[in-house]
Image (cartoon, rainbow, N blue to C red):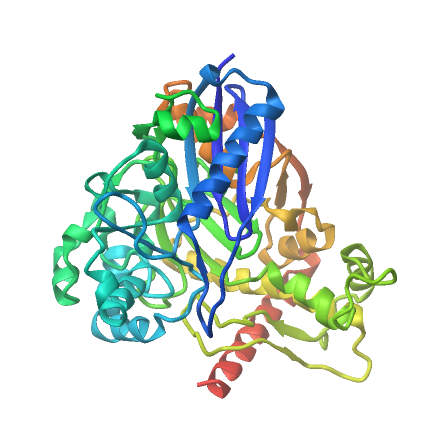
Length: 504
């Protein structure tokens, strides 16, 4: 029986699964990330630790399943999308992983936006933010001695794939699902924009070759085979960004299917057949899908899922969340369900670390509309509802760009999918069905699908998704709340504007 390995080098850790060619999960493993925060605004990871974690995860999956390494058709790796690693001539890192959570490049976001903001959105599909372009400029101008050693910039998934395959900087690659975060791509044509590179004096030689997510980029070397227990010569497929892989794992391989990634970041995406950058509102990114011919128009809340744990620890349990009598998420959800919707219910602004879509790095979180009768349950309900309300803004922006777009359903993945109340709030605010995915494998499953396609196990992604992806419980919207939530999204937008002016 043939199998495939899919990995995701995520913010919280490296996850991996071994699946059969029918999509059955045979084994899974996880290693936590080791984030380093040595100073204000700095968030880094060691690329070799990411490689070690990937090797350990692969080895554990093979050991748990007792699979013959020779049966593994290919391995593909998804990973964090907006950060960068500078590599030297030999393909080894010369910088740490500059995480998407690292905010040091903020002055270069402002510079790129001021000098070429509209041109970047039109060409790349996304405004400058805490992503590749500003980060590369930061290394060029703030660490010139390190920058001189850099021969290319890659992302964690690409770096690990390169190291497993023994590739040098001459073979550095980026798959096309990352291009909207680059700041220097001609995304519609899947190539680099020479004019933007010239404008910011960035040598195009530092930008890696662009490949399709299902392309084989190398083979497991003998030395890496010894470390990860795979057979030397096993094909390594490019893989894609973790968000794009999560969309794929939800079966978003046809126009009209929307996806909610209820994870560390809260992501809302619509699957479309056309490239339409959001030049006016600057809310939505337009990124290539892993499925040829499709695009994902999406936006996200930085740390939207992290807000729930923050509330549980710091608000509900006053910093004592590990005590025997500490409130758990089940307790909070029950309390929130008792705090029914009404006109004066408080609003929560979820941007505790700044807003990303659109870029408002100085915006901060807040509750609005508190009274002496506001309960703990009402506060937690507002935290849950805030993600749905922000999605309501994203949905409106999508409808403005694609007037004929049909929102078919919202498929949900990530840890937050287990919350019945949260799913129902999203269905009611967005006025469409929210659908769980049975046994959702997230980004590792999407990567495994790409591994199978690259190895010739499957002919295309839609047919693989039809075989692998099974939908589960469906949450239908309450049509009687449509007008209530239309007004509530309006009120939420007004609160965001007011807070934005306060934090300017």
